[in-house]
Image 1 (cartoon, rainbow over the protein chains, first blue to last red):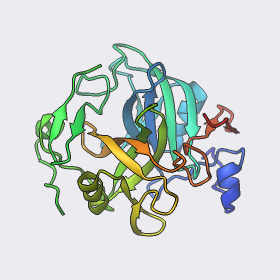
Image 2: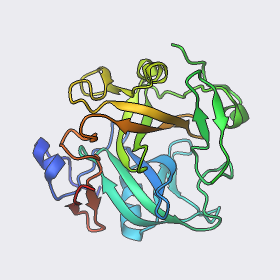
Image 3: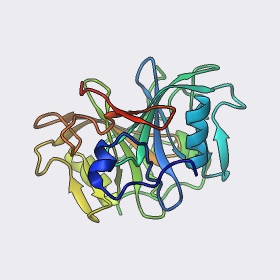
Length: 133
Length: 133
C-alpha cells in the first residue's frame, strides 16, 4: 500500500498537498476517464491501490475489474491503451479524473463505441442511442 | 421503486431502450456531473432510486448524501441548483452523466471552487491546487 492513510483533518484532506486517496470499504476509488483532446467522458471505472499505483508509475491507465476480480490494464488486448495526460483528485479525495490519449481506434467502450455513455436517458425512462461523435 | 430491475440479458442492458439502472448493493449509482456549457467535470456523487427519480421528474439534480444519509437537493441552501439539460447512462447502466446549468454563483464544490477537481495529482503523489477557471 503505497498511499498514506487519509488525514483525520478535513482541511488537510481538502487543501493539503499530499495525495491520500480515500478508498471505500472494498478498497476502491471511482475514476472518471476523459478524452484529453475533446474532454468527452469516455468511461467510469474503479481503481484499487494497486491499479492507482500502476497508473501513476507507468502513465498508463490501470483499473480494477470488479467483474473479473483482477488488475485491468485497459487496452492490453484491444489496443485501446490510455496514456495519462493528467490526473485530478476531488475535494474529499474519493474520486479521480483522468485525461487520457487513447491508442488503437481511440475508443473505450467494449461495445465498440468511443464512449460508454452512448445513450440519453429521457425523462420518461426511455433510452436513446445517440450517434458516435 | 419506479425503475425496472436490470434485465438478465446483456444485450438488453447494453442496447435496450429501457432505463433499468443497476444500483449497487447499497442501492446507489455513480453520477458524474458536468457543466453543460463547458463540459467541465464539476463533481462525482451518488444517487439512490429516490434521488434518481426526483432528478428525472423535476429536472433538478438530486443526490443521496452518504455522509448525512439523506436525499440531497443540490443547491437548496447554497443556491447552486443544477438544472439538468441531459442525462446519459453507460453501457452497463451502473453510472450516469448529467449535463447541468448551475444556478447561484455557478459553482459546485463546497470549498467554494467551481469544480471539486481543483487539484492535479503528480506522479510523485503530490497534489497541486490549480487556479479556478
